[in-house]
Length: 118
Image 1 (cartoon, rainbow, N blue to C red):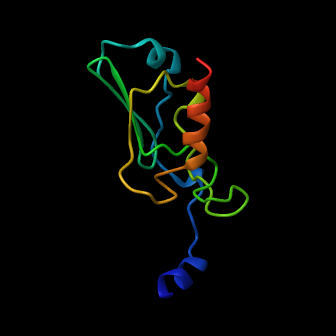
Image 2 (cartoon, one colour):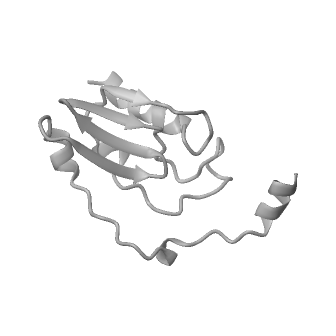
């Protein structure tokens, strides 16, 4: 309860408060790459890794909020580095734990629907 109470008054930094540049990702390169090893930070724990010709996605979270309700809950601070629809076919998804900020049901369902129609 103490932690929840303190969070009520905590100011979350705005994206412009970050003082480091974010690199522009190249979704076209990622879609066609099967040779180079790459690591693309998408946001928080979400990482897209290309290694050995395989595409691996960790802790997929692409929604605007880290919450089961997209109209309530904490908003993203930094925009997603790559849109979910811009990623190539995923060979493996690694889910490290089941918190809302690391396991986004909406992202999983949207990505599955893309592959179900291929």
